[in-house]
Every structure is written in C-alpha cells, then in structure tokens.
Image (tube, rainbow, N blue to C red; front, side, top):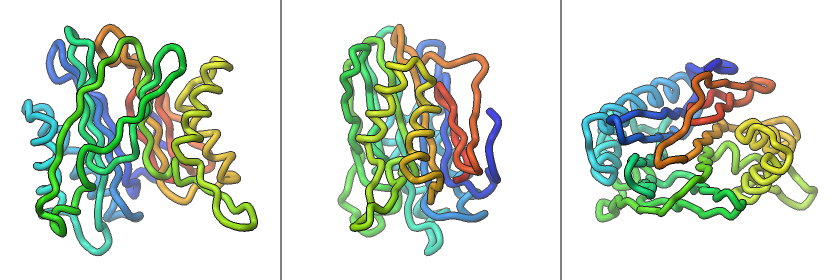
Length: 247
C-alpha cells in the first residue's frame, strides 16, 4: 500500500488478518477528529484491536475490551469517540460473523447486485461512559460469493450545496458506485472514491476510507499486490482489505 498525504494525522485504519489457517478477520476503524493526536490514537487502537483478535477473543468481547481501552487510554475532548467494524469468516462455514461499534453500515453485495446492510451491533466507542447499560453484540449473515464494502463516514458524508441545503453522498451513493463499477468493470474501491470525490466537487472534508473484500470459498480473497490510490491529498483506497489515509 502506498499512502497518500500525511498518514501521521489520519484517524482511519483497516487490516485483513489471518487468525488461523481456516479463519480470517477484517477490521476497519475511524477515530473522530483531526491532527497528530488523532493519528497516534488510531495507531494505538488499531494495535489493540489487532492484538485482541489474534488472541482469539470473541467479537462482542473484543468490542467491549476496545471500548474500555479507548475510554481509559484515548478518549479526551480532542478525541471524543471512535467507531469500529470487525468481520470474521471461517473456511468451512458459509457465513459471515460481524460486530460493529457504531460504524457506518457495511454493505454486502451478491453476484446479482442485490445488497444487504450490516448495521451496527453496539454504540460508538466511548459512549458507554455516558450510557453504561449499552451492550455490544454480533450478527451472523449467510454468504456465498459476495463483495463486502466498508467505508468510513468521510465517504458517506461527502457533500455539496444545492443552494437550499447540503446533499450527502450517503450509502445510496456507495451502492450506486458499486453497481456502476460492476457494469463498467472498474475497480470497485477506486470507483467509490472517485464518485464521492465528484459528488463533493473534488473536496472531501474528512478522512475517507474504502475497504473492499471479496468473500469467496468462505474466505476473504485479497490481492497479493495490494494497491493504494490518492487523489489531491484525499484518502488512499485499496482493493481487497487494507486501509486508507488522510483527506
């Protein structure tokens, strides 16, 4: 991956992990805020999530542990909250297990182009300090050969003024971009990024990450040569499960 811009202040991160010979995980996170402190926080939370998953921690427990870590060690006025999405597949099972701490809904596309929203299963990280009774869960989704698309809110909140208000790119824009990419046989992650950038008239206001993973034969298929693309200092996009950098 070749990051675009100054990655030291980027609050987004993502990684594909091989947890065992037959289990894979994909994690995507987004730290609120901008600046060097946010970049340090993103690297700290990324390392903690990674370590928790590699230890074999179940997804709901992992989110709880990450929430405790974020609240205790990272959260402050400058960094009020974070979101996190984690998905796991097992080689022998036709299902995707995921858990989401307030992250933008993941989108799961079938070969026919139909899609499902993978909504959050718990609150954003840091909220339990205010709402201690909130809980984290996980959901199981049957899959075959599908495309998993996860973005951070810099993509869905790409916006422009129409004279009367703001028009947001939203999940609808992501779905449209995926379908256009399939029809035109373009790289999906790049197509989503370019569509969001056009919508915002070439100016994104936040770190904006796109992660695309192909779920085939019950595993994440990832390119051996993963590529990053940066546009005018905006986020880097990687086809097949890697991260992005600063807007």
